Image 1 (cartoon, rainbow, N blue to C red):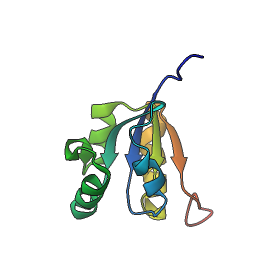
Image 2: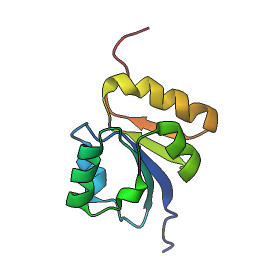
Image 3: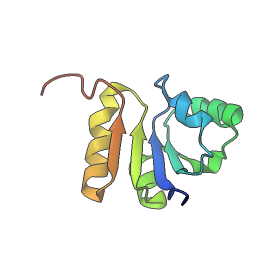
Length: 108
C-alpha cells in the first residue's frame, strides 16, 4: 500500500482548546506542519515545550508565515474573531482553510 503524501499544513492560532489534537500528532506521516501563527509568544512557547516542536516554526505575523512556509492548508485554532482574517489571507493564495466552529461571530 502506498504511503499518503503529507499535506503541507500551517496552524493559525493556538488559543482554541481543540488545537491539542493536531499538536499531539504534529509528526504524523500524512501531516507536514510547516509553520504556526500565534501572536501570544508565551502560549506558543508553552505548547512548543509541551509538544516538542521547534519555536523557529512560530511566526507572530500571519502573512509573513504564509509567504515563508507556503502551506497547502491552514487549520485555524485561534479566536473566532480571527477566522475571517485567516480566510481572507489564505483565499487569494489558494490555500485550503479549516476553521473551528463557529465560522464567524455574525451573519455580516
